[in-house]
Length: 84
Image (tube, rainbow, N blue to C red):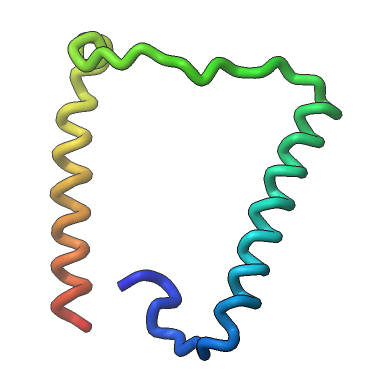
């Protein structure tokens, strides 16, 4: 269950809550832009090369970690869903 999914919201409040959400998103983008300009940090590249085999060669532990995290998540979700 998502956080806040059980909170009853009247249909009249949906527009106001959406406005709050959009204003928070706009404010966070504005603050990020201002901090970029004030600190004058260089822009980072958003392009990357996804090479799974190279990632496994550099860190073979990542495969074990991904399986252990997946198993832990599965167990937690199962326990939570059975307790509810």
